[in-house]
Image (cartoon, rainbow, N blue to C red; front, side, top):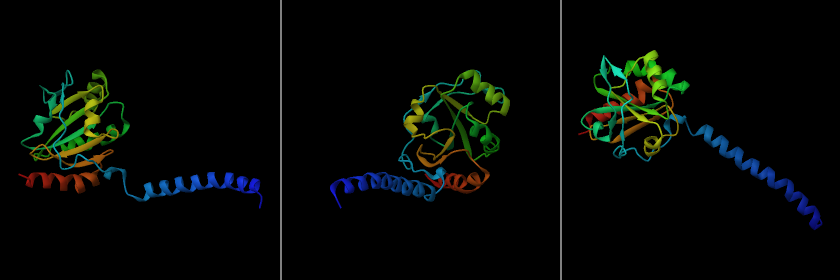
Length: 191
């Protein structure tokens, strides 16, 4: 075969090879499991340093809801939920957060991600406020420190302020009954 024939053949094989590699990567990502179990380098480590101002005008039971910092995550088991008014899956998971907020074993705190205060207040006013504390992360800097892929995400924090579980995506009944509850139980047993 001539050099020109070999060159033409390799021109056709290169795109086919690239396509094959991409197809293998795509299939691997489908088979590796649900997106809610994406790894986090923060598991087993203290929550990142942050201090977020309160959502102005937010209330819970007629009392103003404060902002919070990583210091507020110590002493009890806490779930931190990252949410936004513009996030459709956040709206879908909200009834479950209201239900979860009644669990006396935990505190539920919210980080409002890249949102306008008026929109966040309307969102909580329409759906109800499950959060004991709401921190405004208008620039998204705290979310970067938390390793957030996108909203919604939830973190279970033990009494020492360490992240022990991360859930990516909207909470479901199955997630709350399964891995979230298991993480809460684990956090309650930690010193």
